Length: 245
Image (tube, rainbow, N blue to C red; front, side, top):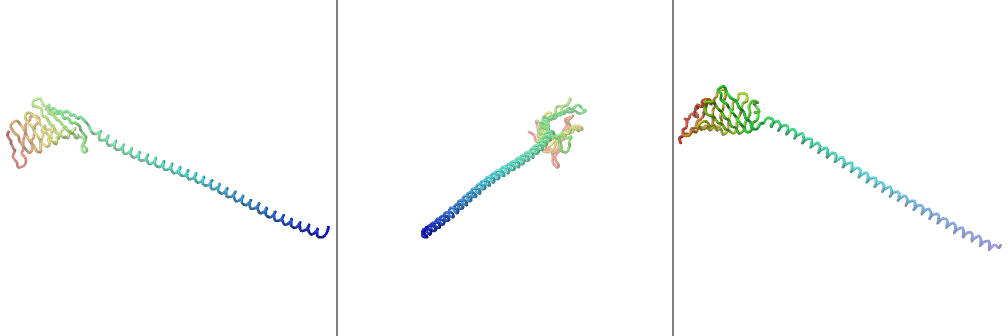
C-alpha cells in the first residue's frame, strides 16, 4: 500500500471516530435530559398526588371536625333544653304545690249549724270559705247568708258580701252590704257582729232601720236575738233621724 492510500485510511478512521464520538455524546446527553424530564414529571405527579391526598385528608379532617362540633353544639343545646325544662317543671311543681296548698284551705258551699242553750238555732251558708292567715279558728266567707230560728220568736235573716266565722266561739262578723230582716223590719248596715254567747248582735256603720211606717238612721243598733228587742243609739253628737213615709 502506498503512503497516500494509508493516509486516506487514517483520515477516514479519524472522521468516523469524530462522528461516533459526537453521536454518542449527543444521544447520551439526550437520554439524561429525557430521564431528568421523566424524573421531574414523576416528582411533580407525586407532589400533585400527595397534595391531593393532603387536601383530601384536610377535607376529611375539616368535615370530621365540623361533625364533632355540630354534635357538641347539639349536645349543649339538648342539655340547655333539658335544664330549662327541669327548671320549668320545678317551677310548675312549686306553683302547683302553692295552688294546692291554697286550694286545700279553701272550701266551697260552706254550711254551719249550731244552737245555744235557749234553743236558738243558727245556720250560716256561704259560696266559699278559706282559713284565715292569722287566726286558724276563723274562716273567711264569701257571699254569705245566715238564719236564726227560735221556738217563740220569728226568724232573723242575714245576708252580706263577706263574713268571718269563728269555729271555736261560733261567733260571726258580717261586713259589706249587710242586710238583716226580721218580722216587719229591715236593717241595713256596714257591719253586723253576732255573739252567740251573749245572744246579742251589733250593727254599725251607715245604719238604717226600715219598717212599714218609718225609716230611721242611727249610729249603732244592738239586737237581742232571743227577744228581738232593739236598742237604737244615735251617732255621736247627733239625734236619731226619723223619716216617716
